[in-house]
Image 1 (cartoon, rainbow, N blue to C red):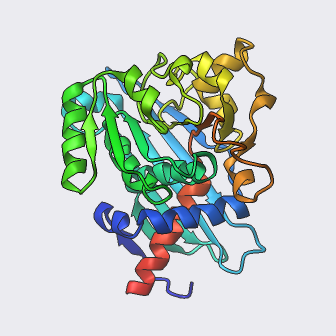
Image 2: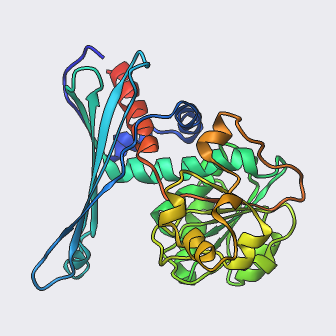
Length: 323
């Protein structure tokens, strides 16, 4: 890390330097090694005549035992009032520094870092939790994150068929068409229950505040991946799904931030200690993963600055090699 030139990497370049196969491998090592991840900072910003805005700061850095150390921070602004302006309500930037000297190394597109590390972390979890013969993937949602789920999962499983369900069927069809143009066997579906019942993997990336996935629909051997619910008020799966599943999380923050866990724990449906393991523990092989082909597994993620740092480091090193 002797090159002190600041690199500015836009969304396209950042994405090109985060291919899912390599990103999953990078995250596997990062979760196994760990790093320092302080509690994320939430700041409310008053905005006269509009909903309050939010500033999020997500820092992380490598510990001193690493020979190559980095420090990074993701800065996120959320301005709900931008909807009426026709511009995005969320903007994200990632700043990467030399972990030894504090010298700034790179400025990267934070939105791209977030979306790609999010689905790659879910694929990494599925590599431990989904059946080895899983072939049919159901994506619930049709937004930016959902659109990347099939490609991420193909890095760890031989996905042959992709079903897409969305509250807006037209959006599901547009995503399915886009996936077909990329060579995937993709179908927009309108019967969510039937799609869940035939899926090997169910991956949800929505903003739902009421459960979409019913536990009674899950057949033995299904893996459920809950990406979207990132506040205590949000739910993507019902209590029965939690009861029937072996539950795993990305980090312990999920127990306090994710409605899919906060609500059933508060109601006494499951206990916090029913969670089998974190993704880091899976990557270190500290705990067993899927025990049988009949087990139902469920992974709940809320995101972590560790994954942001790993992805940003990967982009910066690849860009440095490429010149």
